[in-house]
Image (cartoon, helix red, strand yellow):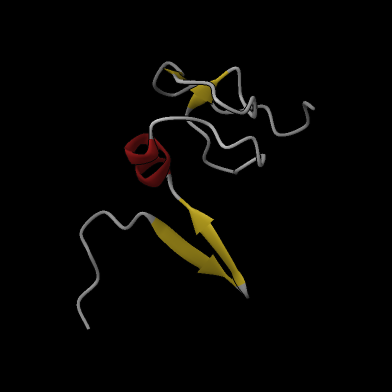
Length: 62
């Protein structure tokens, strides 16, 4: 089976981790504290503004 050039997810053990590509194609934040959330404010359900390129989400914020 061929892997897509830019996969929208990968697995870490039993967990599926969505990439930034997946989140951008969905178009809004789901609020589930995803590792690769590209939206700001980060982890705010419904957020649609995309973070500046290169700025990482703050994983320790509520």
